[in-house]
Every structure is written in structure tokens, then in C-alpha cells.
Image (cartoon, rainbow, N blue to C red):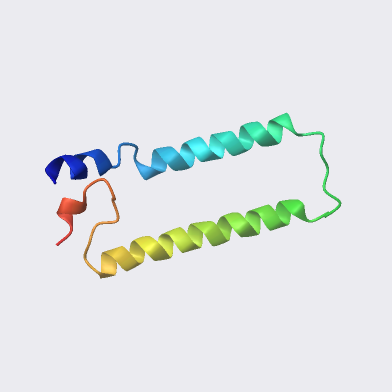
Length: 80
């Protein structure tokens, strides 16, 4: 059983995954910069979605803190 748990351990921290995803999104948008959207408020929509994503992430971390457990999936043994 211990080897199964060791195999399932998270190897890459979530902030690194987030950064890699953001860089990939930037690269794709740079690669397809010639495409235009007829929606004129696309930047406003992008900012609103980014704010909503940050709020959801913050609410999740606050929920973990209120439950007095860890939000770090790499260290489940630190949860009470």
C-alpha cells in the first residue's frame, strides 16, 4: 500500500502548473494573434474571468484554512 501512495504523490506544485498553463495560454494567443473576435469587449470579459478565477481560488484556500487543514496537495500528512 505504501508504494501505491508514493506513486500517487503530486510531483509538481500547483503554482508551477498554473504558471505553465499561463505561459501556454500566452504562447497560443501570440501564435494566433491574427484572429479577431467580433465581440468588442473581449478584454473586459478576460479581466472579469480572471478576477472570478482568483476569487474562487481564494475562497477555496480560505475554506481549507477554516477547516484547519492543508491546501497543499503534496503534503496530505500535515492535515490534522
